[in-house]
Length: 377
Image (cartoon, rainbow, N blue to C red):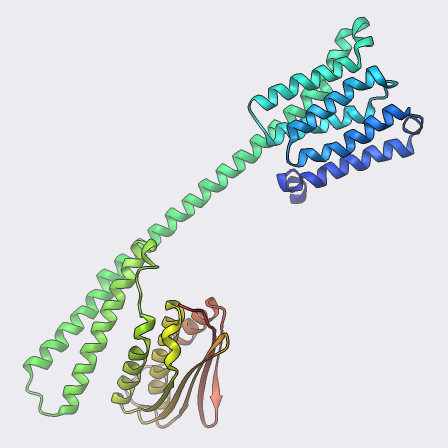
């Protein structure tokens, strides 16, 4: 029954007035009283039905017009005021449901005056009956409308309070995650970077390959630590998300080449074809491409072995960015753990941007492809 509650929302005012108009037309065309109305009363009834649509934007004006028509019917018509009475009652409801302040009280006085004027002949003999009828036809719809408006205001306040509470809970969760990232992950990564730096400077390393590995581990750990600090900053203050860049599109080609060179340093043979126009992408798409490259090359080393060959292609065309990473596997390298949620995270990252990702076997190897919408920086 949710549609019943929605029927009283302000955006459905025209629909409600149409329902009232249909009932008025039915009275005028289907009942003996309606078909026998005088020309003046019929004109007033049709005028009330048509002018009632003014209440879509100006409910107070609809009350004024219906009150005037109801009072005028006593002087110029034959006092068949059924349609103006119903129109005034509904106009009073709309006024109470959608407006407040002086308009409500002024509209109440005008409505009561119009109703009493239309029944002034009965008012002389039975004033209590006329007053009761005026209260039922004018004051009661107004009170009902004010009640609907109060309920709507309460619902809006409750929704706002719930949204604020949800925002506070999310902020607490982000703060908790940021604290754990800083105290646990960042702390351990910083310790690893420090120990590698000490080992590189203290141990007598004669083999340049060992020196290269230590340099690579130190650079990778330092980069990871910098990204962790940026992530902690964003988690603690989401408002900085637009100012904190994990990768600058202008520096994306350098970051992509660094990821390729790091993989080549492990023993992979990676051929890269990167469109220089990637510098024109927005920061979110640039970060997605970098993460696709890093995770994809890490998966090649993990699953195809460090002796595998791979071809990386990033091309811009039309409104899309095409990413392809095709590897031709070899024996799996020892000491590289498998499993995890890397591919799942990549798919989520791509789909959030409105793109598509596919990964699967192809030509005695593995193919990772993604299509991202192209957005200008």
